[in-house]
Image 1 (spheres, each protein chain N blue to C red):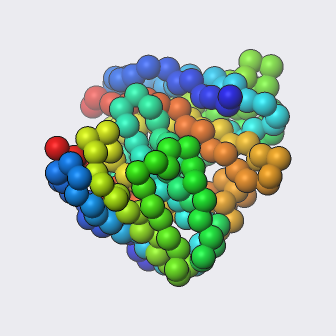
Image 2: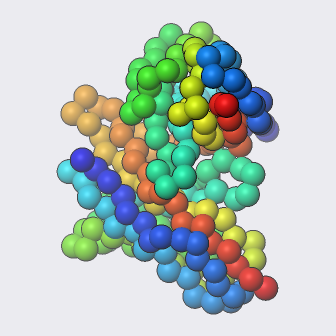
Length: 115
Length: 115
């Protein structure tokens, strides 16, 4: 079945460090890919998305490129801030033969940024 | 603009008790859904609705009921609580249920403990 594998956390970085959170996927068909972020005490919110191969999603200084050849969608940011401390979820969606969307989430990666 | 509102924030139940988790959205979204979030397992879909009067099962529906009598509200009922239902529950909504087209908006969650 469809699945998403994220790097294990927690990840702790110093402010202004470079961030990579790895995400790989397995899917039948042509999924759309997403990164969601969950700040403490809140629900998830969409950070960025890419709907086809070689698309780059970007938002708030974060970027991720849809790589079909390596089935990956790694999240990167050049210089992290304390306010980026959160849990990050990679997700994929597939449209079934019945026309419904199936959205599959990874297990989440907790990121802590130290001043 | 409230978005997706969930109540209560926290709840403790004894095994066998029943309760309803409330979810309301003020964005006139057709699609609403319930997820549970468990450590190391990401988010899993419990039930969803594509419009008033229409509901369907997700990945883990057993032990839960839903109804959708209005566009705004989508309550989740636990009929006879079990310790395995200890989790954080999230309600989410979107315009059309297709994440590549309209993002999911999440509530802030309900943390449920069943003893």
